Length: 254
Ligand code: NDP
Ligand code: 8X3
Image (tube, rainbow, N blue to C red; front, side, top):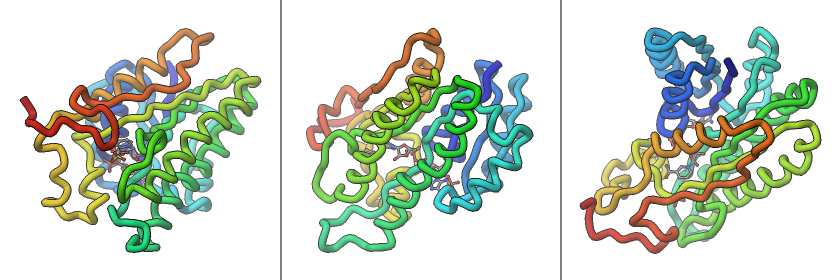
C-alpha cells in the first residue's frame, strides 16, 4: 500500500484527508506544529485502521526544520508516494495600505516558501525512483482576486503557477502534479486563523452552505487513485451556493 505525506494534518482539510486515506489503508506521514494534535490523530488512526502513521512536528517556514524532519524518516523521504501540500493559511483581511507586514510574511513564508522547501526534498526522491504524485491545495483565491484578499490571493496565484511549473519539470520522470482549488471550506480553522482568533468575525459560513473538509478530502482521494496514466491536473470546486469569491447566495443554509 502507498504512503502519503500530508502537510498541515492537525486540522481542516489535512486532517480530513488523513482520516480518509487511513480508512482506505494508506500509510501516513502527518505533519504540523501542534504535537499534541498529531499524537492524538496518530493514535486514533492506528487504532482504527491497519496502517502505519508517522508524525513529524515542525514549522514548514523553517527550511532547517523541514530538512531535519524529512531526514528523520526511515528512508529520508524516499518512502513517500504522494505528497499533499496542504499546510497554509490566510492571515488578515485588510486593504493593501492597512495590511500588517507580519501577516504578509507569515502567508508568503508558509504558503509559498514552505511548500517549496518540502517539495524540493520530496520531489528529488521521486525523480530518483521515477514515480510519485504531488497534490497541491491551492484556492479560488489563486484563480481570482477579491477585496482585502491581496497577499493571500498572491500566494495562491503563486501556488497555481507552481503547480503548472512543477508539472512541466516533473512529468518526464513519471511524476504526476495535480491541484485542488476550493472556494470557502468549512470544518476548518481557516477563518479563525484569518481573523487572528476572533470567533465573531470568523462566523462566515452561517448564512450559506460551503463545501467542507471531507468534501475536499474526497476530491484529493479521487485525484490520487486514478490509473497511473491519468493525471487530473486541476479541480476548481465551490459549494452550490457559491458562484465566485464574491457571488455567494447568503439566503440561508436551507
Ligand atoms: P486549517 O487552519 O484548518 O489547517 C491549516 C493546517 O496548516 C493546519 O494543520 C496547520 O497546522 C498547518 N500549518 C499552518 N501553518 C503552518 C506552519 N507554519 N508549519 C506547519 N504547518 C502549518 O485550514 P484549512 O484546512 O482550510 O487549510 C488547508 C489549506 O487549504 C490551506 O493551504 C488553505 O490556504 C487552503 N484553502 C482553504 C480554504 C478554506 O476556505 N478553508 C479554501 C481554499 C483553500 P499547525 O497549526 O498545527 O501547524
Ligand atoms: C480560501 C477561500 O475565498 O477565503 O482559500 O480565499 S477564500
